[in-house]
Length: 124
Image (cartoon, rainbow, N blue to C red; front, side, top):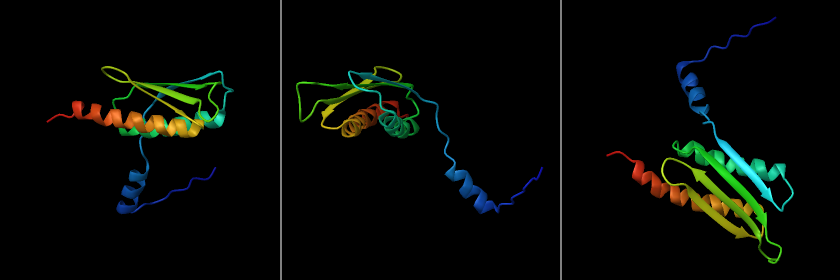
């Protein structure tokens, strides 16, 4: 068994510490309604939500629903996201031609609502 010891200078150690971000535990429930389950879409959505969970520490969980409307041909890919946090829940939805675009638009709407909610939580 071989052990390797690496000595860092103080500045290098501080830079290494800064690169390691603490990832908060997050609960994300994803449901596909009338759509085939997609692992890539799930990972894409979790990646986008992880950024929000790291930015806003008061978030508890997220509920994501993917639906597809049959009667709309140019759009119809619907993404609904509901965020649980202290106080009323935050909900956003979007209807686009692609699920990835729909997720991005929904996340933008949620971030706008979270900025407003963050103003309420600021202590003066």
